Figure 1 (cartoon, rainbow, N blue to C red):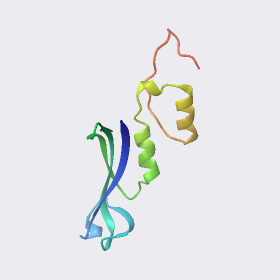
Figure 2 (figure 1 turned 180 degrees about the vertical axis):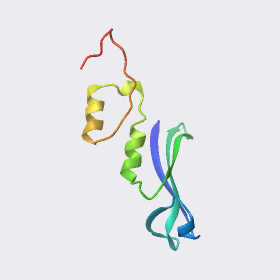
Figure 3 (figure 1 turned 45 degrees about the vertical axis):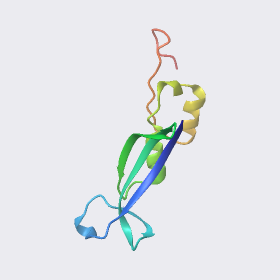
Figure 4 (figure 1 turned 60 degrees about the horizontal axis):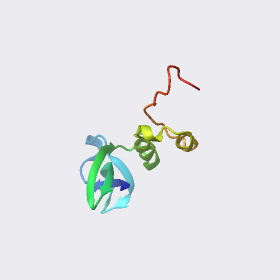
Length: 106
């Protein structure tokens, strides 16, 4: 299984002043304005399974979206090395905590 993140840019040629939520990037196909979204999907046995789709706005960066996607991790990542790695990359994350007793340990 492979996990893939893609950025999709759809050129926008309309009135930029009247349209909210545009994403601006390097010129492509005669415009710098785009409707943009990022997808996170799993590639399993030559089949693509979309896990999430997120619309991008001009305030988004590729790294902020990737960090957000990395924040969607399973409880199997509740491991000191994984958490340290995500903290080192300044990624916000949500990981279900596995209870191992009656008290939360630091």
